[in-house]
Image (tube, rainbow, N blue to C red; front, side, top):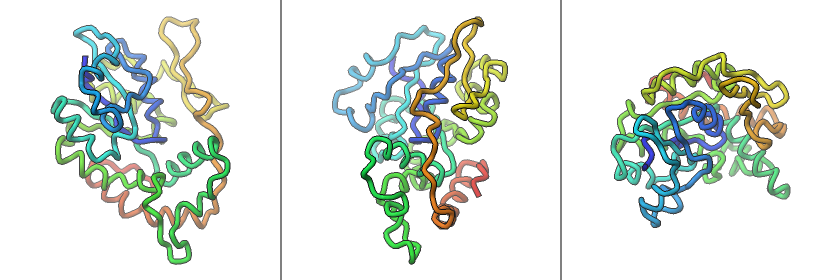
Length: 255
């Protein structure tokens, strides 16, 4: 089937964790890879997309996640055209931390890229932040949200705190299950904290089996950034964060 719910963003926010945790629910069948249908492969058509999805029972929800959908201008309308009842999940975290995580991931693949500071500012002495750099632009959550609200009411969009997903995964996943209309079967007893990675892992049901932890690329140490640079970026994002809190009705406490 075509998906009933989509994890549409954001990159380096915690989308993989939400996907892996919700896949532990018997009422969910989710695609493990990112199909990028609504941003890169739309011309292939809905039948191509449908055949990527796992087989589901009538009682189950089909899901997929592609974090780049959130910042893709065409994605909201394309998803609406598929089904105006689609439920959307957006995982967000402090945009400064998110940008550093994004940069750290890119640096691990391309060690020759410019410094984080050099990419973040057009002119640091004047405080001119470079919003053309995707790592900065993704964190303008309020601006991207406007495109989604043209097609979907807030009641069909659920926002997950990436920070709370680490410190209190059971509560965040309880909210996700409620949003999806699922019975709360993933609870605090299913989680334990992996001190090495700094992330929670999901215990598999039945006992005795290996837990489901995030992959090797998750939890890598962030590069060290000048505190003054961090402060400048926090100042830059603050008005956008406040607009976002007001729009979604939740204070994520990034200040």
